[in-house]
Image (cartoon, rainbow, N blue to C red; front, top):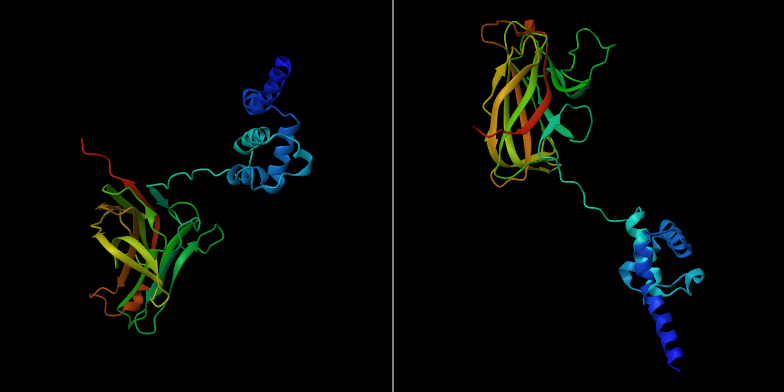
Length: 289
């Protein structure tokens, strides 16, 4: 009698401890593990079984005779080791950025203001080796953002603005440096295009707005100086410093005004003027020693 009781206990214990045995064997590919892997791959069954509990999920006929603890062990092994539906933690958003306009990860929108019936256009532009010699080459890659204007004798100013429609992630309460490359192309006798940049803590989309983007929460206006002459080279704008305060994202608003100098009696001599941007960088400011 005692031997019969002990045998029964041993059988029950064996059934209850097979899960631990599977784990100790590092998910060895026995029949139940292979069956669980197939079910998970074809219908996400193991994920449902583990999430819902063993009393609410129908067991497929070919493994119905297998003890529930063994099924759970096999599913845990398969689901955590090889399932493509396993939930993973997304990597943190970068807090430093380089915008070279080579892709659409950060879309930009804008608007152009032309004097009288002036001619012009704006937007991301692609330069290739086959482009006309009258077109500007990018500072890096093949793309840049530009406004291009054709001045007539009666024109006094052409302008355009653009901004990102998706805020850049940043660290709150952190000092940042914002730099970019700028080039005035076409007219080189003097710098006739000025640049202003404002930084906001978010951007919203509003189809009733002229450009579609509504900037919210002004953080600051960048005070910029040029490294290089924008009329002859891609000059670097430096000195743009901000403190993010409580903001975890920032949006940039660029405004460019190209004016006919007062000393010119006929503004048509300006011809076609391109005001272009490339390689916008947003970097954490190094600590002061």
